[in-house]
Amino acid sequence: MRVLYLLNVSNSSRLAADSGFTFADMLTPALTDVGAEVTVASPVPAGDARVHFVPTISPSTKYRARFDPGMDALVTLIRDRQPEVVVANQIEAAPAIRAALVEAGADAQIAGYCHYLPFSFTDTGVLELDPAMNDSSLGRSVLLAFAAGLAACDRLLVHSSTAASWTTVVAARTGVDLGDKLHIVPAPRDVRLVRDPADITPPEGRVTGIYNHRLYRHYGTARFTQLARRLVAEAPVRLMVMDLFGTRSPERIRLDPSPERHLEQLATMDGVTIASDRGDRIRYRNLLAGAHFGIAPFRPGCPWSMSVIDCQAMGLPVIGPRTGWLAEHIDNELLFDTDDQAVQIVERLATDAEFYLVHAKRAYTSTADLTPDVVAARYLEAIK
Image (cartoon, rainbow, N blue to C red; front, side, top):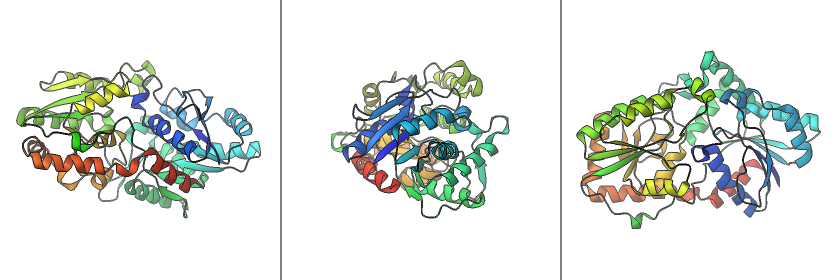
């Protein structure tokens, strides 16, 4: 099978913070291992030397990635590579890919991977637009472009049951018939970030927690900051907050300055340390290994989180709000609805060795089926 994998890299200067790139870097060699001929079209190469690479221009903003797919380049690329399957990792670009296939005279299938959902649903079923995609009220247009992308795809892949449910509802509300083309294929865990829980020792009365998520406003960073104050004041805990972006471009800061503002605020808190992996996955592994537990993001209706999987594969219990995919994936004893409950859970992780070790093992086990070879087999089955 000849696969053309279209990869939008949102932060080429800090690839470690780009979950789509990490996904491709783990997945594409595993697809090659099972006989696929893979070409990655991307601003930077992903995968090993066996994976073909065609350089593309990185969109300067998240809106260009959705509304300016570059038809001329797509037609040329399709004619050159003659794919049997085109993977659209930006769902909104799928109609343009379909048009490019028509223009190029190609009959390849389009497999869309919904890495990111520009919407979520409340517990009462109310659809909410993602504020990250709603500058100048663009959110409704992004949602409709997403629905158009669903219609243009032959196969659709999502990370989780939560994402599948939400995508199905949006498709129905926008008149798109998904038929049998929706498949759940979780992302692979990073093979560099795996630790046997047998090698983990329980904390001795004090724990270090790590928050390794993007500090955007829409990730619920203000809500995390509120909890962080409680944890460092009332529980035997120190917190390590990851600065995943480093210095961002002026264009990105102009669109959303919230990461810089939140980082500055968190840096002034006693008991909180700001850490950076400097884009080095080994350094990142060492930072995770130095922590005892992770904290999930407070992003409303989170459909999946690579950073949560990173912690769990390293045997770190992850605590999180009872919402979205987090409620589907994280052990019920580590979910909370209030700050009081979160403080109680952390205190128990710090002082109850048996409780800690049980959840360290459960965290690791929850990622056991996310090895690249297992995910690649599911991926190929889904896109056939």
